[in-house]
Structures are given as structure tokens and as C-alpha cells.
Length: 116
Image (cartoon, rainbow, N blue to C red; front, side, top):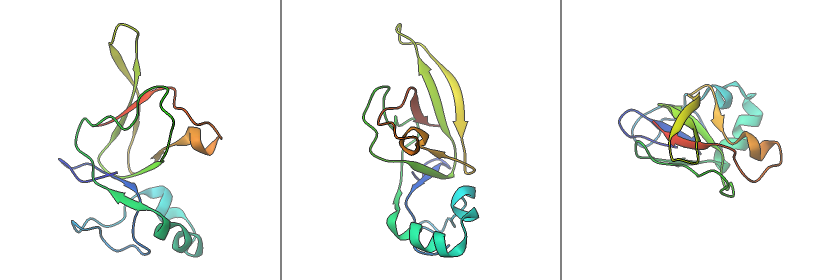
């Protein structure tokens, strides 16, 4: 997901290591670590998504539709209390992705991810 005040996330990309529309090259460590033949299969199925800072990607209990591979910037994982207060319980940078519950077969996320 995206370019905004230095942050971007990959829900997608091009079929190579070409830069995105802003000239930012693919930097996500997971996608870069894939063997070339696997990366060539995966990248064309991904979509570059530009996100705004402080955008909530999904709320607690939402049905998950997408996973996000952070290309630049950070994604903050928040635990929100019943009184509305929150605490940051995790950070995702270009070495990771948001969407582990989907990989594990779950359709909902236990925390609220925000783009920092």
C-alpha cells in the first residue's frame, strides 16, 4: 500500500523490479527474497496501492479482503480498547506484510492496522 509522506505499501507491483509510478523501486524484503521464477508469477497479480498517512486499512472484526506488502514507510498495528483508547502492538515495514490471518485461513484480523 502507497506513497504519502514517505510511506507506501505494496498490495501489488509490476512483473519486474521496475520502479512504481513515482520511481520507487520494489523494496519489500519478502517479495525480493522470492526465487525469480516465483516472483515473476506473483508480481503481475499484485496491485500498487497508494495510501494516505493515518489511514485505517481495516478495523477489528472486518472481513479481510487483501494482504499488503509494505514497500516504504510503516504500518502500525493497534489494539483498541472498549473506551476508544489504543496502544501500538506492532509495526510492519518493508521487511514484512499485513495479512497473516489470511495466510492462516482466517477472514478477520484481531487488531486495527493503521498506516503511519
